[in-house]
Image 1 (tube, rainbow, N blue to C red):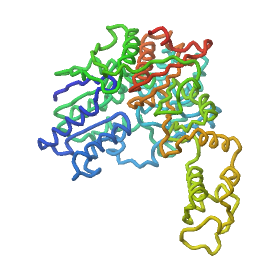
Image 2 (cartoon, rainbow, N blue to C red):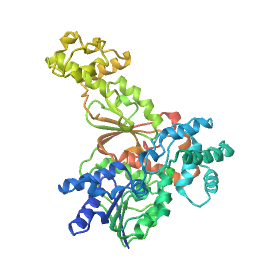
Image 3 (cartoon, rainbow, N blue to C red):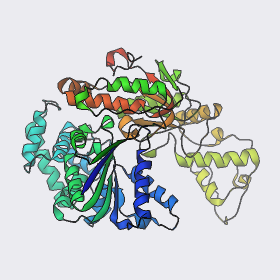
Length: 506
């Protein structure tokens, strides 16, 4: 088995490089079921599939069944059903039974296998299992507790009870979480045989995932590991960046040219990385785009020109994003946030558009479109109506009535939509303003990025206790600033928040 490593700094086309390699092997006659392409996220895996389908029109999605995430491979080889996978509500149920309030933030994302919640109890247990340093889970939990990463106010007795209850719950309902899938795969000898395997975002793999990768490598002739240790930001979820850094390789390649990051932004990014000692990172030289770009400091959300262009608004935590949403609504900004949720209901949008089409242009509407309007308007005259196009006057509407006089909705929602329309905000399917944590935005980009400098007490304390955590914090903000292809706006944290220091970086 031959291993190579590809280092892909931000925007240097790492995915394109991997797909081109996959195409080359396919052109040379390697069967698709002998090519394994394993991405860190579903989005990245789907992108790889779509690129192959675009390149080879004769292929179908089913032909690319080995282009997926590691968790998906385990899920598939174990013959599991979706109903057998732990969901957010299951964790919340367990918490309620034990009197622990649990809110899950990650929606059970398969990316890391880690369930990010507001409960340090759950987070500690998850981290201990993902790191998997021994066969004794109780010892793993004890070791994780002793790292000092969690509040020492945690009740150790309750911690052990929660661990037992978690296992009992999964057994009772025949459920598995994402870590269970990987562990089962690692002992079941279910790995396919491959000629070539690509492992993307390898810097973010946890110890239990590395064990899976090792099994895959044992069943492969040629392996390419791709990633960037400077973008290793999942240490909190058990990722082992040292494993990626130290992994032996026949040849290392550093992709040299970013197609995203402008010069001024690269200057800031490099100064952030300078805070990590050389012995704890792989130094990589890459060129920025020729464009200078723009870096601007602001003191309030309202200071950013959010009414024009595409935007990523990034914060360190979901809590910080929640505080931003009301401000954006007051500004009349249409935005999108977690799980693709829009800042207003899609059904309301459809009803508004259809009603306005009729009132302004006289367009006739289908019965289905009219029924959608009835969800928000106090009319109900469907008896005897057939499937055809209608003038809304037939249902008692007047085209002199504006939608905000006709539709029944929350007054604040009405004011929000009226403000959007006043500012000529385009209420399109996809919002041009995206809210995201830095972790969730990894791999994404936008012409404009607004980076909100803020830290939580837990993060600050962790950084003070561990240089590994301090390094990761620098990497998080490095990832944040390098999401932009043009303009970077940095909003300082409130003085009392003691946010991450970028102001001093030029």
